[in-house]
Image (cartoon, rainbow, N blue to C red; front, side, top):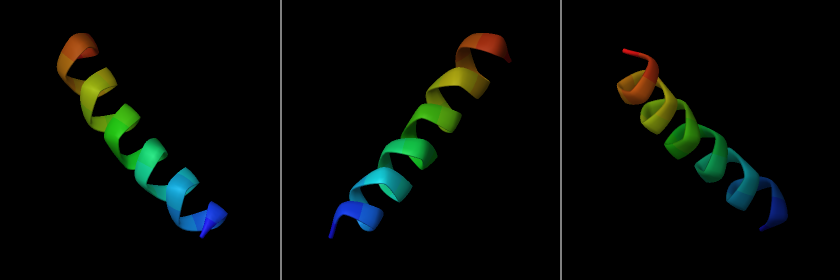
Length: 22
């Protein structure tokens, strides 16, 4: 469960960073 939380957090952070960094 912890691994899934980290995976989801990384995926969401990557999307938010890509939009801000665009």
